[in-house]
Length: 139
Image (cartoon, rainbow, N blue to C red):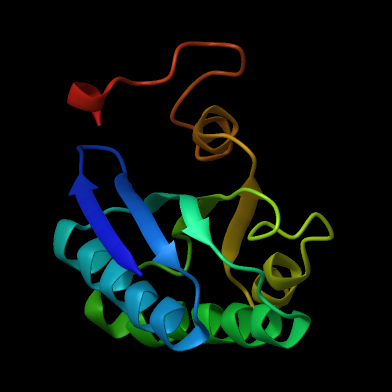
């Protein structure tokens, strides 16, 4: 899995591509947290529409558990427990039952999955509902 991370004034934009594997997902999530800490942002739009794979239920569980624990561990490095993560994924990477999301939320992480970036930006409180999303030069 490869990431492109860009920091705007309001949120961190992460584009991911490649084949899903749990070890890579954990490694790249730590890269995202490092960027959150470095740029002192508390909103992340993770665009994984170019990721391929079909995570198992247990992989979804382990990733959700890992991500929530990592956010808690990174508070000492300046990452807020209130950091919001909007994941934009396509099925089958996005679980319509939201199992991995539920695991992470139940452990204190503010995360939600979406089909498209506009809905994620609304949830991150960056774009108004039904309004124009920020352009690349505005992030």
